[in-house]
Image (cartoon, rainbow, N blue to C red; front, top):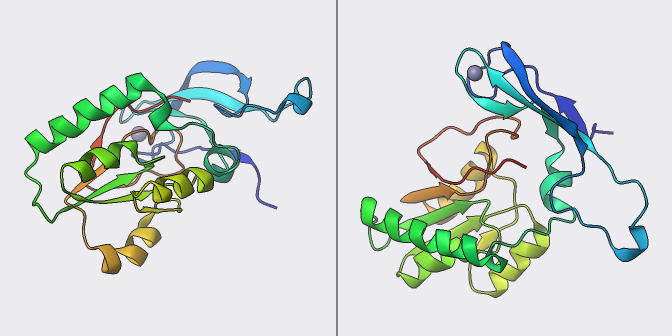
Length: 199
Ligand SMILES: [Zn+2]
């Protein structure tokens, strides 16, 4: 059986082991893991929540890696389109990206951690091809039903190799709420990152 979490001893960015504990919060259930009425009052799984600072590259990150299926696939309830503030931010983001980067009209916009496809819908409305990748099965289903093609996967190099022959290379790749603080490894490549989330 795979452990539900493990301690990450090396920095996610540079591999250094010179990590200093800077914030130690109480063990906490995963964000947005709300329980149904019949489970209120029962103990809920909690995971360490400690923030470390890498002395060598200054990257700030969580000290533990929780099984991504627990964080993002089972009971994942955060839906981007339900927050008017976040939708407004995404509109600004899409407009700024389109003005800063010359994306060819047949270019593909790829969003990693695309959730319900709110961000991609803005690029689609502007006439671009779009593709989302997100592990939250139910949310991906609704994105596809709403016309935003989305793959239900955890993004990694293997997934990129698997789908690139079918979809080609992306002209713009975004990961709007993917945090380098708690991923097991950092993903390299040219990307646009905005609003990293500490959860
Ligand atoms: Zn480092």
